Length: 335
Image 1 (cartoon, rainbow, N blue to C red):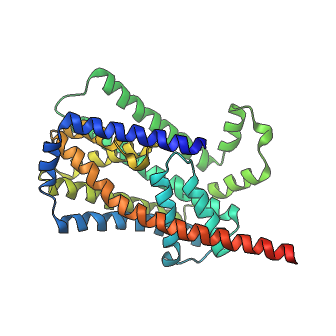
Image 2 (image 1 turned 180 degrees about the vertical axis):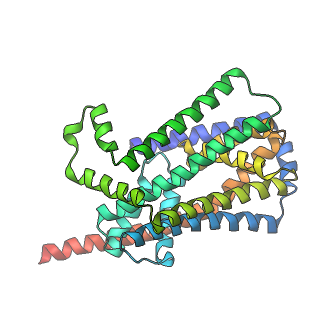
Image 3 (image 1 turned 90 degrees about the vertical axis):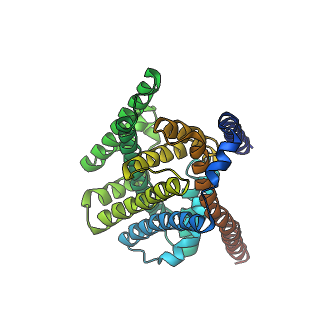
């Protein structure tokens, strides 16, 4: 019940932010930005969104292959797309999409849950690393691109956020490459070191081993993570051009950084938050607040196509797997 209330609360916040942005900018200005967006251009945006998701799935497939599990991309499409829909539409369910993917690996491909979750955690670390690098680079470019710095409070907030991100990920990779337990550190910090079991430390060790080896799978996974960034970067750049604004590659990279910043906030489909954040960035970059709202709405529209498809797969796949698990239990009882 609490999860449902959390979802509704975050959704209401997103809707309120969206309405606030539209009232601030004016619907007429947003409509004028949409005027430049035609059918074939929409198809290009959707194709780039599909490409970005495909690179993410391929990355996961390579990590699984490195663990000794040969699963084709075609076989992974349903579970990956369903996991994406959960993460995208229900971000307040922490690791909900990841746990579902681990469950599918166990039920459909007979991969132990522990092994499946290791592959998912490695995938998550690599993906979040590429997102954070995009945010850092985008914010740095933003500070160089704008004509004047934002108000002192905003500048301090951006600077502090950059420093925290850099510090956190520097600490994470320092621990990984030194093979020093992060789980033990946080358990001691929370006063719960007694609750750590051997399984948790073994999982952490296997994750560390993947990063420590830096073999072909490691570089391929990181390469695909940045190909995903590249596809999303191209989408951002082309979308702004389609909306009638001339920008360069670096400005598009700055916009991309703000896009990843928006999706960090746990609101379904970044509803409202994407508009608010991009209104700030577009206005500061002299692109236009109306274009920012159109950019966010169209980007979300392309992602929603895949999220709805994933939700349908989740309904079918999830019910099918639960039904199969139930039948197995019945058979055991009869035996």
